[in-house]
Structures are given as structure tokens and as C-alpha cells.
Amino acid sequence: MDASLYQPLFLAIIAIFCLIIGFGYLSSPDYQLQERPGNILTPLLMSIFFVFWIGMRPISGVYFGDTANYAREYINKEVSIVEMDWHSEWIWQWLMMMCKGTGMSVHVFFTIVEAGYILSALWAVKRFLPFNPMLGMLFVWASLMFFSFGTNGLRNGLACHFILLAISFLYDDKYVIGGILCLVAFGIHRSVMLPIVATLAGIFLIKNPQTAIYIWFASIGVSIVAGDAATSFLASLGFDDRMSSYTLGDNNMSQFSQTGFRWDFLLYSAMPVLMAWYVCGKRQIQDNWYNALCVTYCLCNAFWILVIRSSFSNRFAYLSWFLYPILIAYPLVNLPVWQDQDRKTGIILLTYCGFTLFMQLVYW
Image (cartoon, rainbow, N blue to C red; front, side, top):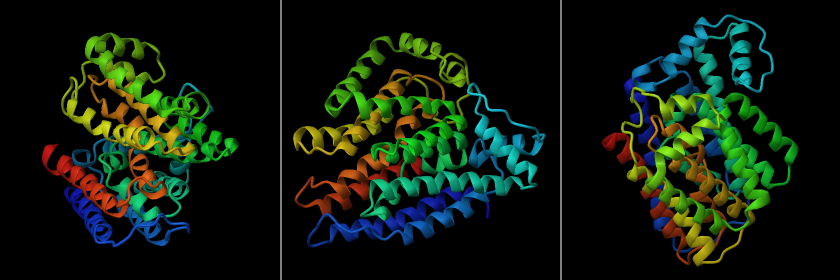
């Protein structure tokens, strides 16, 4: 298949499913929060299809961004021993060496990466939304950056979805497996230290999501008044070597096309915050998992707001945006937010998908 057709066809498939399920909710006579595990077969089959279809994509830097760079690195890689080094992304290097050493083609390597990216998200969704994993995966697939970070920002996307899965175990007090997943994600992309720290803050330190919402609003003010100073300070912390080049260097912007204060993407980022304010503040609904998710998102997104003027700030935005679909879907599936929740769910799903279509096909 021609590389130019991949993203439009992917969006068309997701849009069709969102239309079918969204209008199903709109026409539903009554909505009851489910008490039995939902069907996992359909999202599993769709996930497997996307793994092989997207994983075996053509090598194109025009339509798939860094896919060409990763392919070039893989092809030119010399097989050697990868040593454990916390100052480098050694697990990613180990994965490349293992695949290259066994003679796998670059397409098989990309398929393995895609399997980790998509199936870890499916596993996480099944844990967060056991009663409706199909709806949860529609929100994941229809999210603004899903396709991009499955074909362009490969390491970032893979690491963040491992963190999403890790969070589901940490919230369930399964700290060993959650910690192992965090270490694996850190070994793939060190920038995930931010959501790891934010997750721990959401579990152990900040119990009230409204506190995190206040921090989020405060970050907007700081970014407007002293954004350059805040960016320089955060870059100097050195938790990710790429941050200095993105925030302080003169980069060629081929993605996330403008620098400066991105009010459009701030508005996009505000939706989960407004949902959290309505659910936790106005409706006073308390749910430990949702509260911790809100705290994690607000803290991570506040960091992005502080460096919002940076080149390639989408890389930092994704450190919070990977939580976006879960934050929207979680109250719709698990919490009694509205009396007509079926219709609200349909409207939100269709709006969510429609926004992504607009941004991908028209705005960008």
C-alpha cells in the first residue's frame, strides 16, 4: 500500500467505528454502568490487525517522520553487547541488537515495536476500563497523537504506553510489576521520568485532584509571565539530554509546526482538566484511581505548559497526552456522572474523534 494512504485509511476505520458506537449510545433508551467485564475480542482483533498493518508500513520519512531515521539506524547497526547504563536508553538498544542479531528485517523490528505500543495500551485499557475496553480503545485510537507516536515518535510512544500499563498496576498496589514496567519504559526513553514522578506524587503525596488543577492553572500564568526563564531552568535539570536541544537550540520545525505559546493546544489539553473539575469538584465524585490519574495528568501537562514555546514541544506534550483517552473514558465507563450518560458518552466520543479528524486532515 502507498505510504500516503496509511493515515487517512486508519482515521477512516476509526471514524466508522466511532460513528457506529457513538450513534448507538445516542439512540440508547437507558444507560446503566456495567457490572460485568466487557467484550475484549473485538478490540484485541483490531489491535492485532493494526500491529501488523502499521508495523509493516513502507519506510517513508515523508509520511512517517522518524521511521526513516530509525530504519537507517537499524540497518546500519553493528551487533554488539549492550551494557546496562542508566545514563542511556539501553533497553531500546538491547531490543535493536536482539532483533538485528537474529536476522530480523527492519519491518519485523517495527512490527515488534508496534506490538509493544498497541498491545500494552490494550492491556492498560482492560485494567482501567474492564467493563468496556472497546470504548476505551476507540478513545486511544482516535486520540490526536496515537498514529504519530506509533509511526514517528516510536520510542516516546512505546515508553509512554508502558508507563500507562505500569500506572494501572501501581494503582492496584502491585508495586513490583509496576516498578519493573517503569524501569523498562525508562530504559526505552528517559523522558518518562516525568510521568513516573508525577504518578508517585498522585499516589502518595497529592490526594486531592483540585490541588493539581490549581498547579495546572498556575503553570499557565508562570509560562505567560516568565516562560523563557522557566524553560531554561527546566532544561538545565538534564533529565533528558534532548530537552536542551529542543528548548534552547535552533531546530528545523517539521512537526508541531509553530513555536510560541500554543493557545490551541492548551485548549486541547484543558479538556481532561475541565472533566476532572466537573467530576471531582462540582459533582464531588470520589474515585481513588481517577483522582490519581487527574493529578498525574495535571502535573505532567503543567510541565509542558512551562516549555510550551519549545521546538518539538509535542514530545513533551505527549508525556501527559498519553493519559488523555483514559482520563476522558474512565468517568464515562466507571462513574455515574450524568443521568443521561449514554447520550453524553456518544456526544463526547463523536466530538473527540471529530476533533482529531479536523486537526489531522485540515488544520495540520
